[in-house]
Each structure stands twice: as structure tokens, then as C-alpha cells.
Length: 572
Image (cartoon, rainbow, N blue to C red; front, side, top):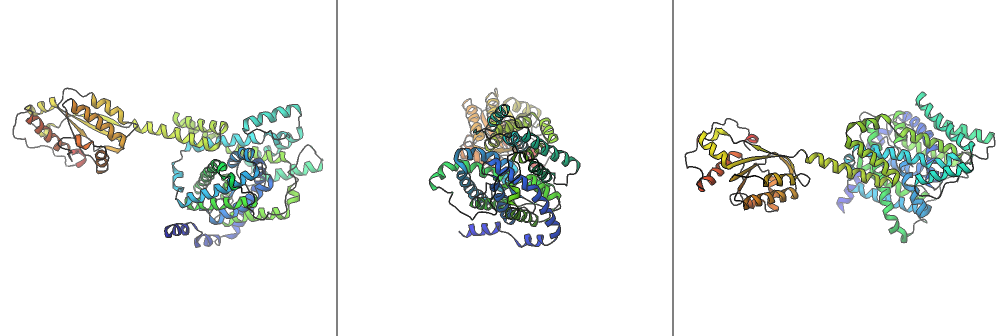
């Protein structure tokens, strides 16, 4: 209990956080305002796309954004509803309804807090870049497909897969064309994309949405369906959505949401670190903050949240230096919820679709994808598989598939580094005649690289084919790692040689490898009586003694060694 409390204390906010907020508050306040302007249409759009409505997106941006800013592990991270999370939430909403999404968010928040307490943040570094690029590409495609119904001005089809839903929306549009919605969506997306290239610091997303709303209101465009009524404030916190009997059914979905929330948040924090000098996030604190944010957001009707890469990047580029900027962003959005809900409710859904279409396009970094595809065939394969799995299945399955393929390819590459090389005996230790006799009866092999399950069986085949010798010396100082499979395969090879009357000796076994070999009984097979030798010369002397005992080598005084090498690794 005491250990848990100490661990929890390490994850709580620190005095340094407050000190940093006091350094340049004016700059942080301006950065927070900029991020809020960019975040407003995104929060509305992702709330609508998730199936819970624009108010859910706003509640998430306010509640989760504030809590993650206070308790998170990054000074620059901005959290809220994101496109990646929306991709996962759509099938959950389709299957379990809005209350199911809220329940999944609460469970996922508890899981993310557990990950923080277990110090799991450090494992983010093991996710390969092709997997990240692949699921980012897949997310961008899915976000774009999700906007097709609103961009075409048709009702969202009742289909769980986004590709199928987009196809049904196109078919409906062909039967009942809506040029107004298409024009608004294309215009907003075009303004955002062109404006980003012309003046990157100007928030063209909100300007385009305001212009589209003004045009729709002035021209009375009935075909441009608006968001609809929004509550003038956040609802009171409530657990009325929680059905204890359905928690078991929601658990697999909650695991998926928690995995995505942790992964995307840590990725976003890493991106923020890379854009600055001197900033470094605490991955476990970041998970703790995101977990608390996801526990609280459903209580106010919000969807699960993660660190938002796009908004975090805007925050950094706007000059933010502390958590005050993210807190300001949440406070401004809260003010909009309370003061401007009637105005926000008039925004056309097609305009929000245009914002998200432009966001999806800007997520795809062509240069990075091209470089990754050209790096190696393995990287290209992992990238494509992850992206396709994101479209065909869902994001969590895609990441699992990408990690599995990346791990298999990495194991194959590592196993190819393992070698078994025959090495000549050193003439300096023996006379020419004696050396010739030794060479006829003794063979030395150097095991180089990892001896584990992916590479060990090749050694079994090579060692088992040794012929016309009486003693085999295995030089093992260059074995980098060994697992139980490698030790068992080596034991099998030694047993086969022993059955053929060939004595096997070993030199240079490291302490950790000796323990593995001893655990499977491989050391007992080495001559004599379970002994192995520190250096190769000692093993050769033992081999000489073995041959003398067998009468294959005359007993003569050993020649004085002329070896001048004193390096211990060379002797092994």
C-alpha cells in the first residue's frame, strides 16, 4: 500500500509546473487562444462523427483538455477528441449506442491510469516508425471516408465499416444530389489547404467555417443542414449511463480505446518534444493525466480523448511554453459553450465535414511515406499492411498486426546475424607434427551472434554433420544472447555428437549463458563431467589429454607457447 501511494505521489502535479506557468503567461495565453480557435471546429466535427453529437465533442475538449493539461506529463500537449479515436468509436456507437460509448470511455480511463501506475509509458519507444506511419495513413483515409455523408448532404448510412458507409452515401447522393452541401464542404477544405500553404499561422479553419455559416444563413440554404441545438453549458456530472450488467460486453472495446488513447497520447507528446529544445515529457505522468481525463469526460457526456497531434503542433508553433496554454484553450472553449451555443448550432454539417476532410489530407505526409517505402522492403510491407488493416478492420487490430509483422521481420534479420564458423587451431601452441595430428582429430567452431529460437536450428544441422573428428571445441565467447530454445538445440546437437563417439568441449561461456545451459542439462554433456573452459587454449589442452588417453597422440612434453596475445577475448 505504501509503495502504491509513493508511486501515485510521483504522478501528481509538481511545483515546477506552476513555476513554468508564471514565466511568460502572456505568450501562453495567446497560444491558448490560437489553439482554441483551431480546436473549436475540430471538436464539433469529431463529436458529430463519433455519433454522440457536437455537444459531446465540446464537453470532451473542455473537461479532458483541462484535466490532461493539469495532470499530464507534457507541458505542451493539447488533448481532446481526435480523428483516430473517432475511428474506433463509430463501430462502438453503432453496436452499443451513446451510453455504451460513455461506459467504454470510463473503463478505458481506468485502464490507462493502471498503465501509468505500472510504469508502462516507456514501452512506447518499441513501436516501429512504419507502424506509426501506416496507422496514421489509415486513420487519414478513414476520417476522410467518414465525412462523405455530411459532405454530400445525405443521412449517415447504417453501416459499421466506413468504406461500406461511404459507398452507400455515394449511391444515395446519386439518387438525390445535393450540390449545396458539396460546394460548402469543398470550399471550406480548399480554403484551409490553400491558406495553410499561404499563411500557416492564420486559423483558416475557423474563418472558413464562419464564412460558410454566414453564406448558408444569408442565402437561406435549406439543403445545408446545421448542427442543431446545443446546450448552453456543460451538463451536471452523472453516472446514469453506467450499466454494471453490460461492463463485460464493453470490456474488449474499452481495451481497444485504452490502447489507442495511450499510444496516440504518447506519440503526440513525443512529437511535441521533437519540435522544441529542452522539453521532455514524462510518459507515465502523461498516461496518468490522460486516464483521469477519460474518467471524467464521460461524466459530462464527453467521448474518450487523447493527446491531439494537430492541436499540440499548433500550440508549439504559437510559442507555448507551459501548461497554461492548454488550460487557456479549454477555458475559451468552455466560454464558447456557455456564451455562444446558439451561434455554434447554426454551423452547417457540410462545413465541418470540409474541415475534417482538409485535416485528413494534411495528416498524410507524402515525403515521410515515400522515404519509409524506399527504406527497405520490410518497412514498406509493414506500412502497407498497417494502413490496409486500419481500413479493413480497426485501428487497434491494425497496430497489433503491424507490431506482429515488424517483430517477425526483426527476428528474421537478427537470426541472420548468427554464424557458426570453423576456426583453425593455433600453431604456436604445438610442434608441426603434433599440430598435424591435432588437426586430424580436433575441430574448433566459433559461435557468433544470438543463439535463440529463431536461429538455433541452423546450428543443429551444421554441428550434426561434423565427421572424421574425435573432439569438437565450441568457442562461445561471441554468443550475444541465448534462450532456452537455443540451449536445448545445442544440447541436442551435443547428444548426437556424443552418440557418434565425438567429445564436445566449450570455452568462453558467459555466466548468464552458463545458467541457461545448466537449466536444460546441456553442461552435463560437456567433457569432462560437466566442466567447460575459460579459454580456448585450455580446451585444446584438454582435447590433447583426451587424444593421449585414446592413444591417438604421443605423450610428449608440451611446447612452450609462442602466443604473445594477452587479450582475454582472443584467447576465448
